[in-house]
Amino acid sequence: MGLVDRERIKLITLQKKIGPALARVDEEFRRITDGDSPLTIDICDHIRQGKSKRFRPTLLLLAAQNDDNAEFADGAITAAASVELVHTATLVHDDFIDEAVTRRGLPSVNVKYGSSAALIMGDYLYSKALHNLCVAGLNRAVELLSRTTVLMSEAEMLQLEHRYDMGISEERYHQIIYQKTASLIENSCRIGASFNERLSAHEEAFGVFGTKTGLVFQITDDIFDYLGDERRLGKPTGQDWEEGRITLPLIAAWRNADPATRKRIGDLADQRDTKVRAEYWSEVKQFVTDFGGVDYAFAQARQYGEEAKSALGPVASGPQKDLLAVAVEYVINRLN
Image (cartoon, rainbow, N blue to C red; front, top):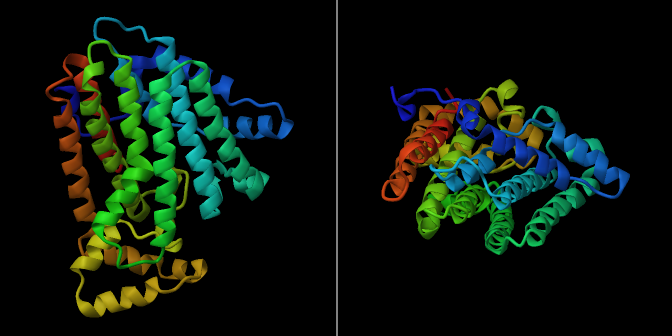
């Protein structure tokens, strides 16, 4: 049975192929998540206690890997750690915006240290990531990650504009998840390819692969909010509904529902109090399942997954192509 034929993919199995390089990324991440003030040092220590899946650095390294040489350039390691740092900054800011209580099974930064510290720490981590790339002279990585941070910030604004908006279009939803999530995964793959002498001319194909994989990642995350296990996720389910984020499963179910049911859900969606919305979570969850929202989102995720793998067909080959295909299957099958 080939790698991509397995029904269930474990990320740790995939990462064994690049284990030594990921260990170097962890060391670099620890080095750059440092600071001069005791509070900064304490918060960075707390953040590092949370277990990261290191998915974005993994994709970067897989794109950078040359089949003829298992070694990675120092620049690729630096870039991978910086990408992880940008991702970490987004989580700190997300928790600040959402007033989240936990992250990766630990108290969120805003709960443990206060909202002001969380806001400043997110800014600090973004700045450290980009400065680290500048010091290393990795100009292409700086360009790509800078663009990503702009897109992610704009996505947060779009999310605020469409909070509680049951009329949000599927097109707008896709714009938001591209900018919020897929753009960082896209540019992780582009940066990785830039370190690969054999494939650097095919950066665009790796960008398409990363974009499609990122869309799969966010759509499955949105499905998690309706079907996931809180203990496994390390964060509560139902948060999107409670905080007024209208995601693909709900958009699709709303489109499929009869007028009477739509009116009922629309009345619930008009409630702005988080505690009141939480009281109706089980009803909304059942609505999304009954009216095909979860099935539709799954089907779309699988379509994007196939498009991601197809994007690499003309350029990648051998173990690299297989491992990147496995990475896509891991994202699709995370609910299994």
